Length: 467
Image (tube, rainbow, N blue to C red):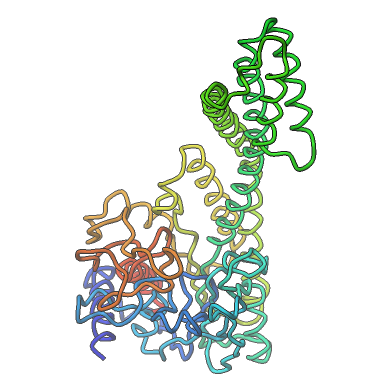
C-alpha cells in the first residue's frame, strides 16, 4: 500500500504541474472518459512479468528494471514499470502478464510451460518486435533463456480473440515498441561485420605470417631470395590444405627452410623460435588492422540499409494501430514513440558512425510511425518519449536524475540484464544510492526512469482531458 501511495503522490504532483493549478475552464470542458480496463502492447519497457517464472523468478526477477519493492531502501525504488504506475494513477487494477513462460534450456531452469492468463491484459513481452516473431532473447537467436517474444501483431490478435474481436470504449490502450527491431537489426549487422572482419583478418594475417617468416627463415641460406620463394610456396601450399593450422604452416616453413643450401642451422629451435615469435606478432597486428578495416567497411556499406527497414517497422506499427486497434473499436489509444536509443549507455558505448546509424534508425521509425497515424488524433494520444529521453540525458538535474550514464545494476547470473536485477540483501545493484539513476542496465530504465515515463504519460493524458 505504501508503494502505491508513493506512485500516486508523485504522479498527482506531476498532474498539478501540467495543469498549472488552474480549473477556470472546467465548466466548459467535456466530460472525462471513464476507463474500466487498461491494455498494454509492447516490449520489455512495458512487460509486467512474462518471464517471472523458473530461474528468473528464483533469482527475484521478472521485470526489466530494479526488481522488487525496495521502498524501505528508498521510496523511489518501487520496482514498478510505467504501465503499473499508470494503472495505480487511474484507479485501475494492477496489470498482470497476459502470458507467462519460457522456451529455453531446461537444465538452466528456462523451460517453463506457457500459461495464458485470460483475465490479464499486459501483453507486452521482453524481446518483442512489431511483426517479426524472433526478437532478442528468443531461442532461435541462440539465447539459452528462450524468451517468447510474441510480436505486437500477435499480441493484438490474442487480445481480440479473447475480447470477442473488439475493443471497448472504456479501454485505455497503451502501445510502445520498436526498440527490439533496432537491437535485432544492429545485432545482425554486427555479426555480419564481425564475420567479414574475421575473414579479412585471417587472410591478411596469414599472408603477413608467410611473408615475414619466410624472409627471416631464408636469411641464413646461401641464396636467400631463392630460399624465400621455396619457403613461402611451401607455406602457402600448406595453408591451402584443408585442416591446416598456423602450427602446421610454421612447421612446414621451418622444415623447408632447413633444407635450403647453407641453412641447416635454422632448424634449431633456438634459431627459428625468435623468428616465429616476431613473425606471429607482425601477422597478428596485420590481421587485426585488416579485420577492423573490413568490419568498418562492411558496416558503412550495409548499415544505411537498416534505416528504411526501421521505417517500415514504424509504418507497420501504425498500420496495426489503425486497422486492428482503432479499426476494432478502440477510442483511447496512448502511443509512445521510440526513446532515443543513442542516449542509452549501450548507444553511448558505440563508435561515432554507429551512433549516427542508430540515430537514423530511430528517426526513421518514429517519423514513419507518426505519419502513419495522421488523421487519428481524436482517438490517439501521441507521447514524444524520444525528445524527453534525449533531454533527460542532456540535462539530468532538471529531472531529478542523479546519474544518466551509468547502469544501476551490476553483473548477475544472466550477465548484466536488469531482468534479474534487485536491490537489498543478495542484490546486484552497484554500490551507493541508485534511487534516482536513469538506467537499470545499458538500455532499460531504472524505477526512477519508469516514473519519469509515467509522469510524461500522465501529463499528456491530463492535457488531453483523458485524466
